[in-house]
Image (cartoon, rainbow, N blue to C red):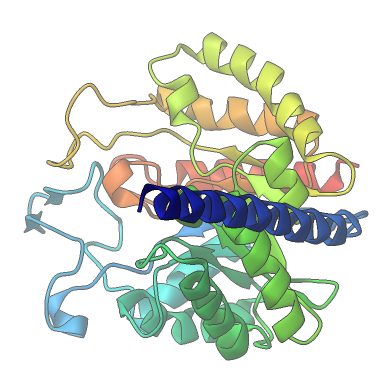
Length: 352
């Protein structure tokens, strides 16, 4: 009996070693395939992270994401600031049209739209956003937020849904004819970089012409796997800092991040006007609050980003009202950040 157990354990260990060898070989082959991808002369773009998860009783029959709305006092319990448009609905065509008009006037190229899964509230807003963006000459892509089952197979299923349903829309963001998808850090964490290596390889086999994936991780490993790299939010690095400290951090860090992407990958730098999620009850203090410094935080980050000269500048955010990072006009700040965007976006695009 003991001998049989020993033999069984030995066989299991041997099989595990063999499988690890096979897995390493497969991964090596996929990495070699990704190493052939070279991105050069990427058109400069300014894109803002966009949230289509808001709803109100007038349009969607109930509140989505807005909580404790007081229209008279212009306050929302779950949001740091109050939108000029009020507690709007992301499925309201008039709202989407106003967003696109503002974005176009401010020099944005498009939106990276938060996306969770097929046929949910977010997904159902995508056709309205795409059709409206097309009218204004803007480009739209998805921010792939989550893999509910935490399996690479489901991640691939969701990716193929996006590509097959929206990838050929005239307003979908494309590079060399290939549709672009951004992948959030949480979704990367759920199936790890190795999982996304497989997903990207399979998606490029299954979708004619292939696709472009921008991952939320600033690392050499991520740059090997994704076509480009970025980070969603920098408040963790600049929270509580003075304006001079924010400037010093950005001047040092932004060029380093561009260098991590390297010459063959799409480099992205993320800037924020500020950050304050202290109104959310599930986020306990101390929170990583970044002061707007009267609008100067945003200007300082723009200047550092232009000097570092990435391929794309990403703005967090157009309308993440819960985290107080929006550049969409608010009662508190008006259209100050839109005017700043309109000032700096053309400078960035002229910078070569």
